[in-house]
Image 1 (tube, rainbow, N blue to C red):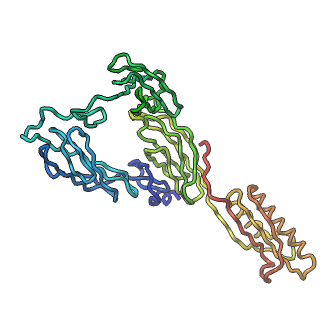
Image 2 (image 1 turned 45 degrees about the vertical axis):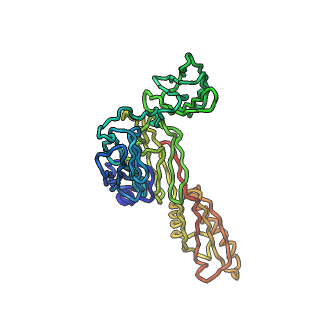
Image 3 (image 1 turned 135 degrees about the vertical axis):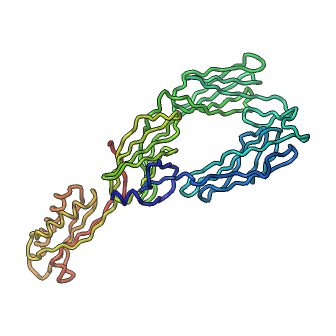
Length: 419
């Protein structure tokens, strides 16, 4: 199992990154980084504000679609087809991304730069376009309107706003929700301090102006002193042979480090962006998990260790030798019954059937005693089995000298226990 289990191919693709030390995926669902770089090519290196250019993307792995983006919306825009439209003179930076697909994560190219000059050829216009805090263009004739911002420091947030006599602020996180109200100190606007924010949580702030016509939403995290250990570990079934191990997401986490060791297997290490992991092993087996959260600064939380035990439906049909003239089991039949019982999963339903010759006086009673002994033998070997018995009239001469065993295993499941 050691060599073969850990070299099986990917069964499905999920958002988990495998560490470089893990040479192959076993029965774990992982996504791999795109091995080939994504590239972006521009039709020109310099254009004027009354011209346009185009970007083309190539490379990457898989068949994910390409998309384009700019980090300089005050200077240029780029649409889904890669057409670049100037906004103002200056330096325009664009990049291409190949989306995740199949077993591959998404990958973004290095940025490409395009110089935009004014109509007369200068690189900067006398009156460059203005943008708001979100990069949206502001018309030179537009009237000022309500705006707000959130700054977080230590365990408190400072809400500032303009052009509103008051604001209502809703603060929500996984811990719950609360509301605050601030009143402007001057005609220009005001500020409101929200204290007692808890480190390690992601907060959503919704700021609404006085006439409740404009709401602005901000998300801010409070950095923890140390990355919190994961909690809330649970398992659920994904498919007939796939199970998901999940835990509660932690704030300020870059990756989850997942170390997995099976009996007699080499340990494997994976990194996941999401708080879950997929297990595909078809065999009955037990794995030791150690899951740590890696913070933005690179530090790790203390690991949480647990055991994930898989069951697999094993069913057996067997015919064992017996003596139809005796109520006792043969030594061979007794040994085989014990061997079968030890191979079966707990709660498996076993049916033992013995046949008798209805023309022979006392044969039925002998058969009833014999099948009861067979059931007791299996229960002694494994008490968690459910054993049923049947005594039937012969269907052939050969059937009289056999005990027939059939089984019905319980549905496949995974249980989590402390390691």
